[in-house]
Length: 233
Image (cartoon, rainbow, N blue to C red; front, top):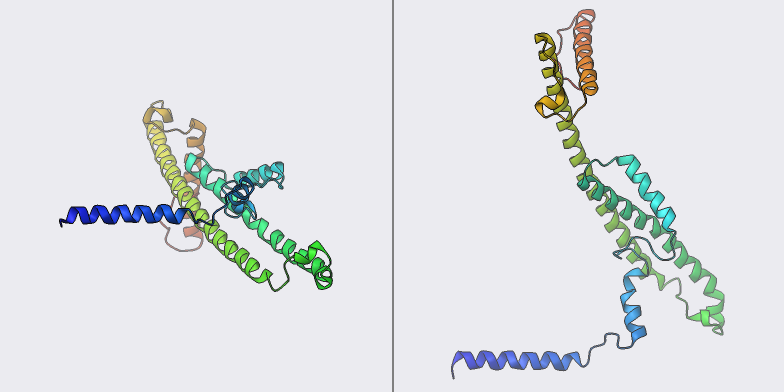
């Protein structure tokens, strides 16, 4: 027998087995079961794609996001996306202590009914049975904390590079401005592709000159050699 029929027979048998196994699937079959299954991620909302749960106030969430926008002042689409991720992760992290408190409170309130065994609430989880749930929340908290820090590090790196680039560009523009002043030639930042206004470049030039003067005066007063200008501001 050739290798090809053997492969086809094996493949056909495997497909038949898969179809047979699917008939014994333990997945939800009713519409209610399917609905509950689709909402599993929303029970605590820590892994849901949507940050805000139906029980939470959208206005409070929007204010929460605005606070992050005001703090980090994103200037590009990438920075805006990272700030949004920070806000969503923080929102989920703030939910964990509330979930933990709700679990413990429910277990403690239902303890008397559970002991009597004559109330529907007697089916509520015991404090001991909450250990896995609390542990799961702790794992979610650790994961979200790592995610928050990673996103924050990315945002800080990107913003640092952008601001460093802007400083270099502004210093270059100030140097070109002073050159044109020395030659008596009119100049606008846009003449060399700079996006700064003339006033911004003027202020930068003034600051750089004052810093340079301050270094030399400090060197004379304190009897120490002047340091090379760092041009930082």
